[in-house]
Image (tube, rainbow, N blue to C red; front, side, top):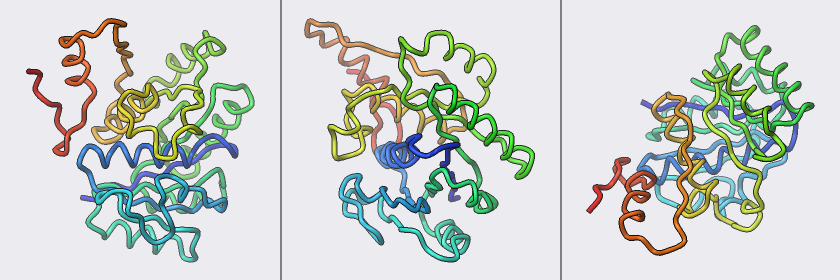
Length: 240
């Protein structure tokens, strides 16, 4: 059964498109077929992995992308009727498009740990709950470990049942042309894979960081490969 997940934010530049593209790539790596639909008027989804309106050759299971179109609700309905396991809808930060959420199963709100962003996010969460009767999930983007000391704990303590994951503030997004999620040695790549698992399994498990030791260690590599790898069947490989 196709699951439709919308991505939005309280303000422009929160990283909605980046999140949708990377989670889509993560789900595809796990063997799921993914349909990406974009309703953000800035139309930036195509820049990831050479995607272009109407189709992409990036991967067999990540197989379509749409630009802004009329009758958006019909497009989402058509996407739901496809053979995709997941339909990811990029709404950007345009609250006027929230009416489209009635066609979606879940909504993920992307935010940064900044005062202005959190205030706007709080407003959006309240609007989604009171007006649309939704229980939105939260993805914290551009997380700065040092600058956000204390704030992250406050967020976790008050919204622990909403947070699907934290993505670090990093320049790796601009360095790679592909979604960073396709690079298993990138911290944020692993974090996006973790977030995709939470969305896939409807869980809120916390991310646990594993760092490689400086010296080469075959046993350690087997452990990290066992914990982090996503096979085509969506299962973890057996350590040998």
